[in-house]
Image 1 (spheres, rainbow, N blue to C red):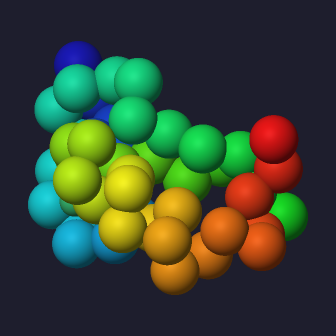
Image 2: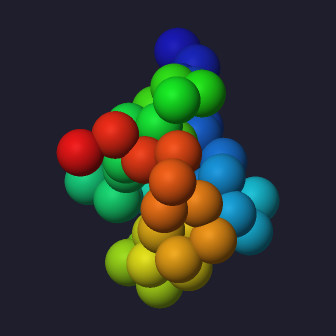
Image 3: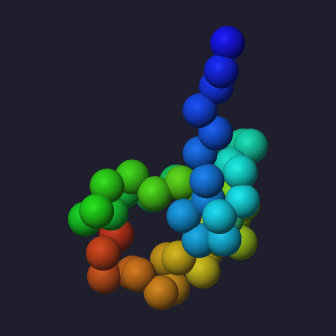
Length: 50
Ligand SMILES: [Zn+2]
């Protein structure tokens, strides 16, 4: 069995915890931690659908 490991959309680390994700114009982005999610929101706030 192999499991797909998602890479953090900001820093590229493996995403080991679900839940740090956001829907954007380019699709769903997933992050490794709340910090990366927060930085992405700051940099790409205009692309986030909410
Ligand atoms: Zn990250």
